[in-house]
Amino acid sequence: MAKLIVIIGITGNQGGSVASTFLKDAEWRVRGLTRNTQSQASQALSMRGVEMVQANLHDIPSLQDVFKSASLVFSVTDFWKPYFDTSNQARAREQGKSIGQYAYELELEQGKNITQAVAREVAGLDDVGFIASTLCNARESSNGWYKELWHFDSKADVFPTYLQEQYPELAKKTSYLHTGYFFTSWQYTPHRWFAKMSDGSVQMQFPTSPSMLVPHLHPRKDTGPWVRALLQLPPQSIVMAASEWLTWPDWIKTWGEVTGMQTSYKQTTVQDLDDYMPGGSGKEIGQMYEFSSEFGYNAEQKDTLMTWDLEKMGLHVPTSSLREYVEAEDWLAVGVMAA
Ligand SMILES: NC(=O)c1ccc[n+]([C@@H]2O[C@H](COP(=O)([O-])OP(=O)(O)OC[C@H]3O[C@@H](n4cnc5c(N)ncnc54)[C@H](OP(=O)(O)O)[C@@H]3O)[C@@H](O)[C@H]2O)c1
Image: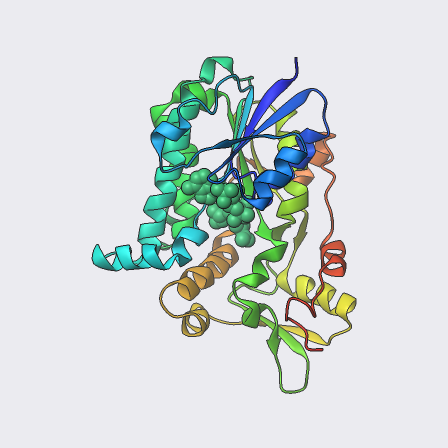
């Protein structure tokens, strides 16, 4: 009988890619979690042969049985949708917290609930039986300088910290997938990715040094191949999932070559992003770019395997290029380029 992979976040970017990878493999069957089994995305996955089950990461009883019989679990937690949810913003205000801290607490709760539920099934899991999508700990990596990179620490404080401290048996079967900047992230701050200059050219404006090499990921296409690679490595491995490593000037240059636009890159400040998106999100996003410039995107954690480390081990992860992504996107339809 085919082995079972349970995928959290299957209707989203990373989980969707993992599903596509494992649906092609007859040795695996796929179960996916969603809050809404009737949504269009859930129905489409059911049609492709996925067993879709209802679960909410904030509702512990709904997680009771969903990991039963699993050989492998892939987990994603969410930060930005709860962050931009206006009812959460109102609750944060009532509790006298920043929305960053509130969303941190929600993502932390998701991660802890997942960990507790998966830990109950640890005996049935493969040697690499749990793969958690996470990011590095910015607070610790910067010796406390970056205290409000909430969306990094809300992942790292569970995967690995809480998991290793509270569930050592599960930790022995866990590997970690750090994910690079999504090719699609321009949607959050389009006027800083593609600032329109008075001469008609387009300028990318981030607080990252122009010479800093950072990882970029096509989450919809390339997360699955990276999860596959983790299955070929020992448990407790950490990989930096990247489609390509590029400086930001390289990113915008590639975009310009495909679209035919004149482009440039300017290193700006956290204050600039805070002014552009007041209320906390601009500051947090700006600090993320600054942190990656000063410490490295994953703080150059020595135990993280990069693309080139895997290549040296004879493990090639088939990924797509930024150029392919830019060519496939309709920049007129998404409003980045004027007609
Ligand atoms: N943007 C970037 O550059 C970047 C880079 C690295 C990491 N990340 C991280 O990536 C994460 C988001 O991943 P993604 O883009 O793959 O996800 P996504 O496309 O935004 O989709 C979110 C997924 O999570 C599920 N989900 C959300 N809340 C849930 C809940 N309470 N219970 C059950 N399922 C829930 C959703 O399922 P249903 O809606 O079907 O319930 C959906 O499948 C964020 O934490 C972000 O910080 C982003």
